[in-house]
Structures are given as structure tokens and as C-alpha cells.
Image 1 (cartoon, one colour):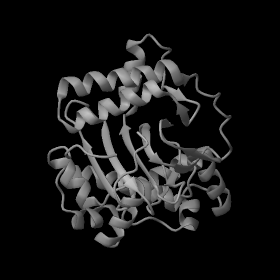
Image 2: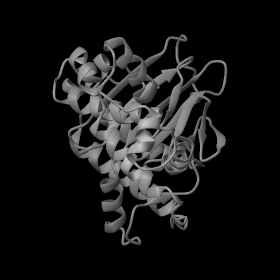
Image 3: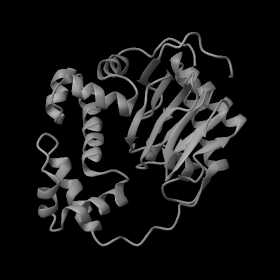
Image 4: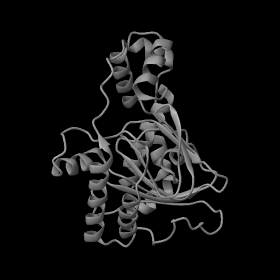
Length: 286
């Protein structure tokens, strides 16, 4: 667990296993790489095997080291970067909401979207289960992978899920934010200026900016790039060449796509597509 990975070269592999419907996997070692502030539409479940990852989440900076599990809830903005000079190594699973909700229902837990209050949990048993599941996915062992993964997720739900916090009363401007998000989704390749976006939802730029950041954790331009990356992933999964993907989601060129894609996903669009359309990576560290 604490063994230092050989060398300091950054390395990352991102893929999806056929036995885990909708669950993406990442195995990576990062030193200088930084994840920009972004959000996922599902969960992030990571086990750090070396070094320290630091990340901003829910208004605080958290640090996770070897033997700790990181759990990020859906649609919660966060960052990620090295928390020690040598960077960090980890294995990550990205289960969609319906997967964890389905397992929670099988365990007779309260209905609704599972919620994890603590973003960093020291749980040696969870670490063993998650690492075993992740490594099985590299070996393409369907029965073992699916069994271990469901077991690991079930353990996390029983031990660390809790009732979600009470919903805040919607702020004045929540409707404007909803309409603004709809416009941004529809106009990926030709987004309006902030002033025009505010006018379209019948408010002023600064009130919209404040309400938008309160609702999503991101300003409109950062939110737009997150949506573009999500759409880019769908196109890459379908086999669309990265250069064409860049144009279809509104980035100026492939280099522009690559820069933003790696800041959110952790690998380049080309590496992502090769891994998704090809076999699982060979087993290795971390």
C-alpha cells in the first residue's frame, strides 16, 4: 500500500469494465497534474495508495493519504492536486447514481440518492475491498469484478452513507439559474455572453453570477466547460475522432479540447478513447 511507485513519471489509465454497467475506472499516478474545479453526475470513490491528494470540496481543503478512501457526492464541485512533493497514486471508481441507489435498495436502506457526509474516511476494510475489485477489473474477470465491486459499494453504503442534509430554501433567482443552464446546454458551440445570458433569463449579470455559483458551485463559463467535457466523452465513446469532437462541443481546436478534458477526466481524449474502445489496461501500480 505504501510502496513508492517507481520513478516520478505521471501515468494514467481510464476505462470501463463490461461487468460493471456504467462504472468507469481510473488508475493513475500524478505529480504536477491539477484537476480544475468540476463536478461529476455520479460518485467518485478513490483509494490513495501513495503520497497525498489535496482537494477543495464543500468550502474546505481536504487531504487524503495511503489507506484512506475519498468519496465525492454527485454534482458536487471539487478540485484535485498533489498534497506532497512526490504527488500521489490512486485507484478510482466512478459509479453512477442508479448503481449505488440500486444497491442501497437491495440492502433495505432508506429510499433516495445515497449521501456521504465525510469526503475522506479511514476504513482499512473498504480499502481492501475496493483495491481487490479494481485489480480484478484489470484482469477482466467478470464474476469476481462484479461481486467484489458490489460488496465494496455495499460496505461503503452501510458504514458511511447518511441522510442527506436538509435542502436549502431555493434562493431568489433559482428559476433564472435553471433557465440559464438550459440555454448553455443548448448552445455548447455558441454560448451567449454573460450579459446576454442574464437578459435571456430576465435578470442582471451579477445577480445571475451569484445565484449560478450558489446553485452549481461554478461560474457559467466553468460550468459550460464541464458540460462540454461530458458531451465530448459521449462522442468519444461512440468512436468520433477527437478533432471532430472538439468542433462539435464548442472547443476552438483539438488542443483546446485536450487541455480542458485532461483537467476534468485526468487523461487526454485520445488516451480515453483508446482505453474505452479497447481492452482493459494491463495490471500494474498503483
